[in-house]
Each structure stands twice: as structure tokens, then as C-alpha cells.
Image 1 (spheres, rainbow, N blue to C red):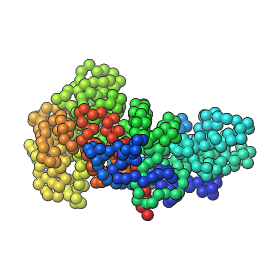
Image 2 (image 1 turned 30 degrees about the horizontal axis):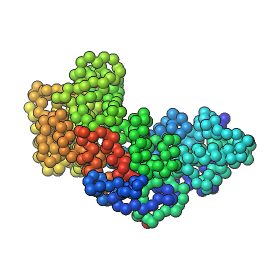
Image 3 (image 1 turned 180 degrees about the vertical axis):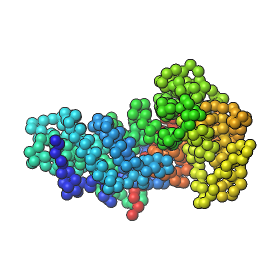
Image 4 (image 1 turned 120 degrees about the vertical axis):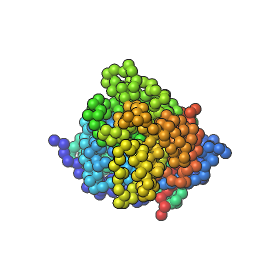
Amino acid sequence: MRRTHPIPRVALVLGLGLVVPSLGCREGSGDASPVEDGSSGGDADGSDGSDDTGVGACESTPARVGLQRLTRAEYNRTVRDLFGVTSNPADAFPPDSSTDGFDNNAKSLTVSPQLASLLLGAAESIAAEAVATQLPTLLPCDPAAQSECARDSVAAIALRVYRRPPSDAELDDLMVLVDLAATEGDPVSAGIENAIIAMLMSPQFLYRSIPSTDVAPEAGVRVALDDWALATRLSYFLWGSTPDDDLLARAAEGALQDEDALRLEFERMLADPKASAFYDGFAAQWLQLGKLGAATPDVAVFPAFDEALRQAMADEPRLFFDDLRARDGSPLEIVTGTATFANAGTAAIYGVPGVTGDAMVPITTDPTQRAGVLTMPAVLTMTSGPSAPNIVRRGVWLAEAILCLDPPPPPAGVPPAPDPMDGESERERLARHREDPSCASCHDLIDPLGFGFENYDAIGAWRDQSDGEAVDNAGALPDGRTFAGMVELGQLLATGSDFSTCLTTKVMTYALGRTVTPDDACVVETIGAETVTADAALSDMLWAVVTSDAFRTETTEAS
């Protein structure tokens, strides 16, 4: 039976600051230096990397991110990459709150007493498994033959766990825990286990880039992230996990301040299979695809619908985005593309012949009927009722996810939409609903968006008629531009700024872990205009985000 480690009491006595960082902590490291507005800290040759056009011409002071705790998904991936633990221990933690559509917003990632207790249990379990399965890696020397063996080993582990080198004081504290095991007559492996538990419970691990010193520059100053903090932000952006040894090595060399060296790491990481986590972290949350699990199509109306079909619907956008990333296609394909993946079940919904079996295979959809995610069965099913499409749900989804519009909530006491009258179409029923001014404030926005989806039934199959009448797919954008169906809308979005600005806003919100503010508008609009285009690649947009001031700097905490 594994003994109970006295870590919480000992660590608190030592002042390790378990779970919650001290008020003196800040992001970055002690040698961060102020930067002038409009620059990212400069290139290796001393230039500020800006010109008279593009992102470099935007002048603003990016908002503060602050302390950013690892999300449940990030915690699971991180302990997997650090110690090979694949049991997903963070699944037992309380769900992370979502802000602006994402669960990694720094202000939402608090630590409750319940979470603190669960973190300790997870740390003990992870440490025990790591020592049991990877001791030769964790302790690659013989403590009996080498006096500094244990200290060097703990320092190497701490480098990876803290995502920066530990300070001498931090290392001294960890070694007290290693020595404690020896005084109790336990082997050095027990001391290593003690130290790992303390590391996993420390703010240096649980929060991004906690520094090794409490000495901070003047409050309210924008500082360039040092290499360690930049490596961490880049890794959690692209991989949703901790920096690997190669990225840490570049940080140790101080290479990441050089844009060419940073670009090489960016390209290496984006090509790595671990970048598939970008879908779970960003795309699935952005498109609200978690709602598919709650959809309840009526099997009497749709007898082909079962859990296997639901899973195939969920798999399609994942494969679509991973393919887009792998071949570095244009971001516009998200709303215009016809290349996707299907098995027999979803191919039948698409009307694509020749697909058999359960395996998801590449297909090309009808370009007159389909437009990227706008017409994927997953989106169309999750925004429908059991037997019929829901114009309002579809309009709300389009407004929030694709246009970054925020429909106002219904006022208190507003009655639901009226029941249909004999011979009345859904479009006519909703027009009657909008006659109430208190309803019109919301439905004047979302209903015209939702009407454009009328060619698709409740599980996404194409239809030309509804209730015996020809489908009316005429829709309108809030600025008055009209479109007939989703394909035409996709083309409008590809030639305007609505989608490009919205997509960039969503990516930056996720990349930074904070709300995008009006001060970010110039950067967001410029990146969207320059990189969400037909002749630009997905990597162009992501790279523009990485090289923005907002990504590469942080504002120190105001007093």
C-alpha cells in the first residue's frame, strides 16, 4: 500500500504557495523590460519589425491577461506530455467556466476548495505513476555515486513542469521534500515523488509563467514576454499543452526573440500531430459543437439517425479542420469549402453516392448546396428541433459564431412565439411574432439569418420543398445585404469583412485567454483583412496572431 505523503503540511510550512500564487507574482520573468507601443520587442537586428501598413501600423496597448490557470483539457494533455499519464485525471475536476465562448479565459479560471482537494489527489496519483513507470528517466543517475544526482534530477524535472528553470530558492524547497524521504528511511524515489507532488500543486505549474522572483517592474507597464513565457503561450495556443524539449531548448538559448527562429518553431509545432488539439481547444468551442450531444432528432421522422450517425457528424468537423491545418488551406474554406469527410451515413445526408461502411473518407460535396461548416450535418442537427429545423436557433448560431454578433436576451415576460395559424408558413409566423416591439429587438437580427438555412432539414439533408411548398431561402445580413441560401451567404462572407474580422477575434480570444477589447480592433481587423483571404493560408493568420503585440507582450498588474 502506498504511504500517505505529508506534502500539503510540509509544503505550506516551506512557503511553496500551493495552488494559489502570492499577490506578488506576475507573468513573465524578472528580466522583462518595457516596450514602446506599436512594437513587439524588436527583431534581432534592432528594428521594431513594423512598417507603414499592416499590423505594425496599429498602435494600442494590449489588455492584461493576468494569471491563467490550466484548463481541464490542458492539464490532461500536460501531464500526458510530461509523464506519459493518459488516464485524464482532470476529467474529475469541476467543469471550467466559459467566457466569450472559450474555457481558457484567465478571469474565469479560479480555484475553489473542491478543486484544490481534487488537484492534490491528482498530483499524488500522477507522481506515483510517473515514479513507478519512468524512474530511470526521472532519476538517470545514481545518488550513491553522484552527490548532486538528486538535485540535478529534480532541477531537470522542474524545468519541464514549471516551463522555465527553477530558481535556487525553489530548488532548495523541493530538495527539503526529497531529503524528508531519506530521513524517514524511504528510498530516493519516494523523495522524487514528494517533489513531483509539490511541483504539480504549485502555481508555477498550475498557472502560466509564474516567475521565480517577486520583483516586478512598475505596474501598468507593457513588457515583452521573455523566451520562457513566449514558449509557454505559443505551446498552449497551438498544442493546448506544455512546451516540448525542443521549444524549451530554444527558450534557453534566448532564440525566440528572433522572428526567424520563432517562425521555425511555429512551423514545426503546427506540423506536429499535437496541433490537432487546436480543434478541441479552439474550433469545437468556437462553433459550439458540444451542443450536438444534446440534439434529439425524432427517429420516427429520421429512422436513419442513431448514435453512430451522431458520432459521424461529430467526427466530420474534426477531420475537416485537421485536413485544413495539414495542407494549410485558406481560412475561407471554413465557410465556402466543399472538401470534407463522410461515412455511409453522413454521405447519404449529403447526397454523395458511392460511400460505404463506417470509416470516414474524403468526399466532395455539391458546390450548389454546401458551404463548409455552414452546411455540415453537425451544425444543422444541433440547431434543429426533433422533427423540424429551428430558424431562430440557426440564426442565433450564425450571429454568434460566424458574425460575432450578440443577440440581446429576450426581455422578461415576453411571450413565446405564437402557434402557427392554419396555412401560415414559419416565415409568416415569425413575422407576426416580430410585430411585438419587445420581440423585434432580437428577432429582427436573427430571423433573417436563420431563413437562409431553409434548404436543410433537421439533420442537414437538402430539401427543395417544405410542407409541400417551395423552400424560401431568402435571408439578410444585419447591414441589409441579402442572400439566397448558405452557398450565397458563404460567398458574401468570403468577400466582406464580417467573417474575417469575426474569425480573427475568436482566434485571438482563444490565443490570449482574455476578452478582445476595442483597443485590439485595429490589429484584429488588419489581420483579418490580410490573412483571411482566398490566397492566404491558415498558418498566415495564426502567425499574424503570434507576432502581434497582444500575443508577445503583457501589461503588468496595476497597483
